[in-house]
Length: 397
Image (tube, rainbow, N blue to C red; front, side):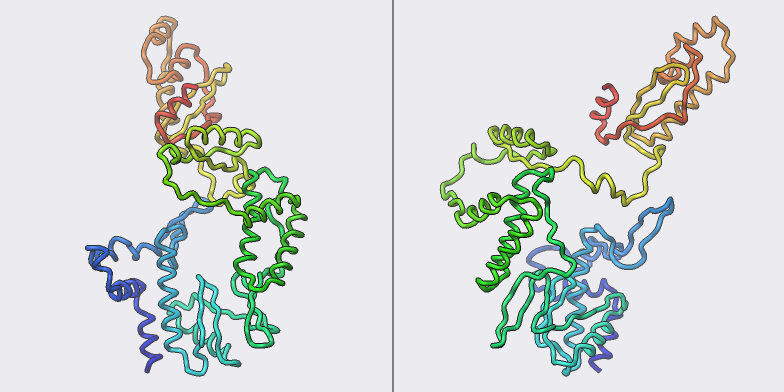
């Protein structure tokens, strides 16, 4: 009967799971005046599974799951996983019910009766009403089992110790010391590895072995001994925290993000610090923005908020303009106006009088005054800027 009730509950819509979780929250009324119905409407969970994207010139609609990038998706997924594991554990047969269940996102560490792994896995995979979530397992091998970055080792006396876990495919490749990055980021790599060792590894002998491994791996990545020693010294001799109240002059006036240029960025940062500004650096050229282009390239004619160039076919002059609308629409407007004058038959007298007329753009003035042709097919976007005032400055430059 319990299993039948569970299966019936699993087919309830996801909105119902959220509604019941809110109803169980006894402190909800103290934190908000909104009703449960109001919260459901505001979060728009009915739209979480609707996402549109373009690929290959076609528009697709995601019809299952939660939209990647939505701020509600991680929360919704975690709530669903909590509901799923609660139902799975409470309805599991006694013989395969886990004695311990620890989950982090989608990794689970569990203790169950020997020989019941397959039965529990089958039960877990039957609990999901959509059958889209599939559990797989890895059993303890020679008294060892990994969980996240931790290798749990069972000792002969029955106690356990923890070490760092690295997959068989791990290559010990870290940020190269000769790479084009600020020094503090490279020292941060050393600090992170040492902090992980201090936090996870439980026995001193294992900590020494881990430090030797870290030192060897960093040496292969070009890190000098002095850099590792500096980080160790800073960890063992932390600067005392100031207990006095900070003056208004000591408070940061803001954060300035500057592109990293070796030698120059450090000097600029010191200047900003003198004036009370904190600084952070970012790479201005990465492999990702050079090689990875996950989105379809936008057709140049569809680009909006752009500064564009239209060249003349008969002289080296070019027209520079800007538009907040799509470039293609603005280009058509230029073409239509020019075509009006190209279709007319001008005498020498009418041509002179037409030059004095005020036309809508300098392109028309140029065509009427010189009888030149415009290379419409060579028109291009030369820059994009969403701020109108900045776009005007770029156009003027």
